[in-house]
Image (tube, rainbow, N blue to C red; front, side, top):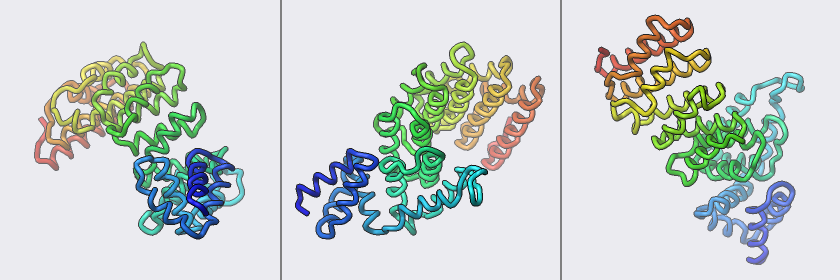
Length: 335
């Protein structure tokens, strides 16, 4: 194979999906001369597409059965009760795939990404959910840019929604474009509530304090549907857990507002999210040894003592015990 032929096939693998990708991939894999050397030089490229395709093709050269092993595992463990064979939930199958640990099979992540973003052999059905769940369990940073691409280039579908959620777990807030992307999705009222909620959760997990004001607006009864408010409030709890927020030991953005709302909120599901979010902030402050008392402390104490909602009283008491135990372990005490 000449260098020009290699380059043309490799470029096709980078740019195409489905049958066109598979045809180019198989042509490259059929060459037994300089293919592996050419791939190795690209595996560490700064261009994530180039590095991804090189990693996928090298995985095929090193272990030809890995791709089929993943698909076989998914086929052998159907997730619908009407399917033949032992039924299993998508999360269980995702865990089984992730259990092929990278130490034993270092090419597992490229193989998963190939099926998820290149060959797309799992659609329709729960396949994307299973593979995305496996990537989340593996916590491999190589998945970030491909998932980011799925969100920005795919304008609908469950795969896009799953990618938004996975980015919230796998990405770092300094990854280019990740925080602005989720801010745009959360702000876009044309988006499905599920997508906006996943974007809110991603912003919370990313822990960027700059997202606090936008998340706070999405928690308000006059600006969002209950399902989005629940996601935004949970996201506030995650955000408050970040060292940049909890470590200051002073009221965080939105703390006083959400603490006040705990007494006035009428939606039961939102109430439970409020209770948990405020408790997350207190637990994080205890862990960081900055347990200054503030609006969240007082609101949680009042809720535990006599909130009109029995479930809120129970949850507030449970979180209170966890916070007390955490303070005792740190030797801080609780006053």
